[in-house]
Length: 200
Ligand code: SF4
Image 1 (cartoon, rainbow, N blue to C red):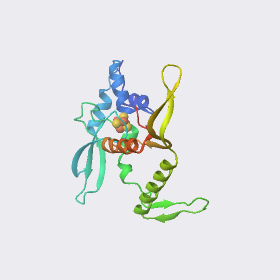
Image 2: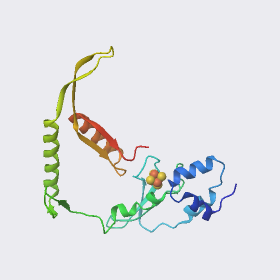
Image 3: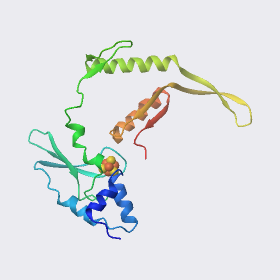
Image 4: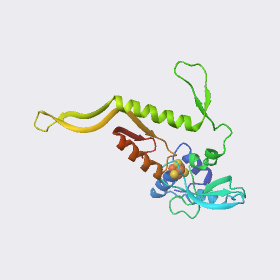
């Protein structure tokens, strides 16, 4: 079955781009037109740094273009990648907007309990406030021992050192290193509920 570029883009809409491209190729579909089109896209001039899309574990390769001031001016698929061959799904193709986006808030906003308005706070204040609340919540609901099934139909008291009062939910833009540190911190605190939105 031959699929032209227009048909390929139609098939890919609403899917996860490179992963689907690989699946289509695996099904015997010809994705060369889409890959050729991706190769033909001209990169904006600037310093080119190879990188990886931060959004999911498919790991599509990107080229990040920066100007003389070190600011990102464009991000495109890297045709040298054996994984994605220059393609990016709609989410990966919009990575540029993760950094450059006039709608992105760059200041900490805080709304106190019961308040009807937001206040601007410093990042240091917000970090201390988050740490204070995590510590307070954990200490108020910390289990040193818990009764658990003993495997023989009875119960046995075991040392667990955990808390069910705090949960951690990661997002797609959290990279490997951050996830590693997050797991270390959460398990050190005794947090049981640790999850990530991008777990595929
Ligand atoms: S989110 Fe990124 S890594 Fe995942 S399929 Fe899309 S471009 Fe590739």
